[in-house]
Each structure stands twice: as C-alpha cells, then as structure tokens.
Amino acid sequence: MQFAKLTGVVACGGESIRMGRDKSLIKYRDKAQRYYLYDVLSPICSNTIISCRKNQAREIPAGYAYVVDSPEFENNGPATALLSISMQFPGSPALLIACDYPYLNEEEINQFIQSIKDPEKPVAFFDPSKSKYIPVLAYYPKDAAIIICEHIKTPGYSLMQYLISQQAVRYIPKDLRCLIGVDNPEAMATVNLLK
Image 1 (cartoon, rainbow, N blue to C red):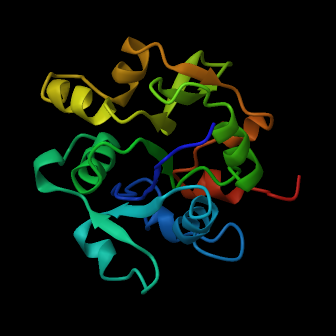
Image 2: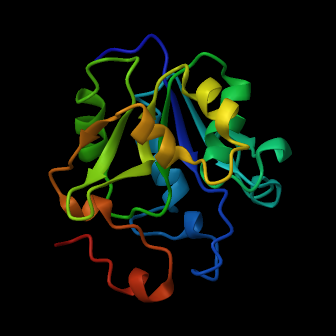
C-alpha cells in the first residue's frame, strides 16, 4: 500500500510508573527505544513524530520532531497521543507505535505496512492467544481521530473500543514476541533480542 501521506507516531507519553523510569529511554539496541522507532519510521512515513509529555520534550535532541500531549486530551491513555498528533496533522492517517515493545523491529513494521490494503480501514496488531487487538501497534485512517474525539468523553471509551467498532483488520506478526509489552523491571530483565 502506498500512502500520499502517513504520520508515524512514537508514543512515549505514559508515566512509566511500573517501570520506575522512562520506558522510552531504555536501550534494547544501540539507542533509546523512542529514537530507534523514530529512525525506523522516518523512511516509511511522510512525518515522524515523538508524542510526549512536556517534561520529556526538554530532553529530546535536535533532529527529532515531537509534539507535546495536548492538555485537552490528558488522561485518555494512548488516545492522548493520537488525538494530540491529529491536531498538528489533520486529515493524515497515523501509524501509532508505542515505545514499550522491544521485539518490534524494522522488518515487522515494514510487513505491517504492507498488510494495509485499504487506507480507510484501521489495521492493528492482534494477539491470537488473547484474542485482542494491540491498540498501540496500529494504523489509524484519516477519519479515526474525528470518530475517537466524538466518543472520548464516554466513560470507558478507548482505542480498543474504536478498533472493535470499526472491525479493524487483524495483523498477526510473524514473530509473536512482537506482541510482548514490557512495562516493569522484571519483564525488562527477560528481554533477549538475540533469540
């Protein structure tokens, strides 16, 4: 699938409370996760953006574009990143990638992009063992932010509800380890990218 425009969003604005430190700065490879993902998405996307909190923005070096999470969308989990970015790039589909999936790599992201056949239909990584979407590893079409914004004040509404209601296409990765989210030190200690 070729896109006229596609915004790559590296989501790293979570509080990282369970990890005890900023998950986006953990180095699983030769650089911090947020910069590794940014560099992977940059050749694929028209715009690549790090979505972050205000205090994180001060640490981002020149050469990496970022958008600070908008206060009007605070406390909406990863929807905060998607909606904040959509204000800067209205009408652009988005590839939302969270920073806490260490096994996710360039090859799998490229395979995911190639799986998008209809630019008007959301596509998300899907965990077959739990029969659920991974909303923070997903493609959101250009009208997604409008729909999500209309429902975001409804109690319990989330990106997961959006994907379910839109019957998002399921993408099962070749390497199922890509579905492993790491949000605490114990889980981080088990990460082995050499296997």
